[in-house]
Image (cartoon, one colour):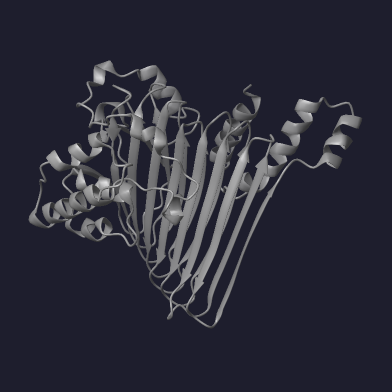
Length: 427
């Protein structure tokens, strides 16, 4: 029986979608479509969505957007959202389509970009373990994939910034951008993904990014989910890591009816390392979620998770973190830490740290804290003549300093620091 959360619009959309592409893709699309019609979108009965309300999504008859006309887009808004102060190679994706006319003409040396039917090696990314309703929806309605290849041994001096925009044609539009990064062995790259909306009512963005990280490659990956009050964004990042690779992820989530970032990392070969640092901020009635799964599938792998949330008003945040250590993953080192700061009595923060360990020779730890601003520290600042609101901002910024300090790129750190200051300054 189909879940009530899979309202009739999405169910009809999936049922009437005509699978296209090679036979293997059509088969996976049809399988995902049938499973989605049976299960629907996730409900609170699923652990990963225990604290996530999707009720508002059920109020819209979501439909795929029409092809966007480039001339109709607000270029000034796009330019501002593209972080012009940051020197980077920019790619603009609107409603899941790469818009070459709005992107950089110059493609970095050693990089190829193509939007087309999924390549054959994308197949393994379409059958993730524990797929939820959003995963099934992405696969069932899959059209094209933007594939970005970084050749072996490439070191890019500037980041690649992918602006993933929802045009906001209607508040019932559902966009599903799919991006596939293949990072060659020994390469070192910084990639920034900005999930943005061009209007206050842009429906649902159900985005999927998949990353293949080859031997001894390093990827610094920044995910910025910046929504508007009437929008919902579910952004999924899935990473497969080979021997000696290094994945360093940072995320910022703010300002949406629902903003959710899911990270799934599989350390497939020895000596691989992954770290994830995230900050989610929310106020009003906003809802922000971070959900992280790190699977240690090989010996001598390491991971760290450091997640933080700042919650004000009647907003809600949730963090679900799971570290899985497989039987053969001996000598694994894994740490997980979640911190939440509540700025009002009506704000709430939920945490679900979890360890699944099936090996003997490991070092794993986790911890979670939820608290408010320190009254003694506030009193000290007030006694030095600092107004109450300003003192609260000083301490809140100090709480976020650990997250900012994990970002190696100084220019990127400045951008994120400015985002934080702007959020703190808003009424």
